[in-house]
Image 1 (cartoon, rainbow, N blue to C red):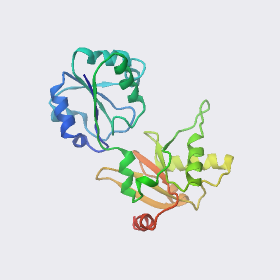
Image 2 (cartoon, rainbow, N blue to C red):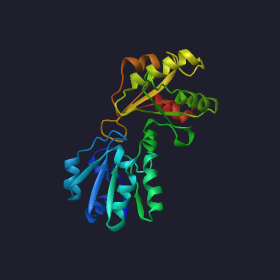
Image 3 (cartoon, rainbow, N blue to C red):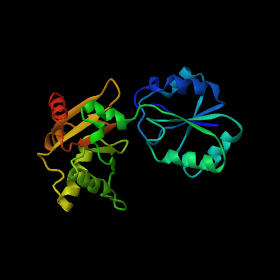
Length: 243
């Protein structure tokens, strides 16, 4: 049996009681911490679940997923994941491989940035496609996240920009502005209002609502997100103006 268990987006205390109890009962506990920035403490988590935790990397989860799933054929193992287990598409590979090998699985959900963004006051029902801002390189400089945000705006929907794990909100805004200079779709300019948020779901949660130019002057550290509001309900706007 393989258990995919969410660690949540806060400290090691964000793991659910169900998740912690499951970890105590399985033979082996693994954790991948590369798909998202997890602010918890691994040693304290080990004391909490009374089990040692083996860190696994991207290769273990993707290229060597067959071997990982094979471990669950004859024994119970737990794989700990930052946030919610199914927020990152890579974890669906584990479930699909488990089906092929006829290995039973169970998902134990936890908090996710996809719901924690409601701390901004925006309704989750009014969000369009979620996208990730990618740091460009000479070999790879995608703009699909910009294009998706343009489409969301046409529909009046909010756009949640997830950021690379080590990216602050200032860098993300700069990337969007450089793409705007080329595409000129009017998605972003110095007077366009954005929401910058950092450490949502924790005691360090910070939410700023201001013009892009002002947000550039006060970048928020990762883990962070940007949100481009679409057509706002008056209650959403009222909440944000008080942020």
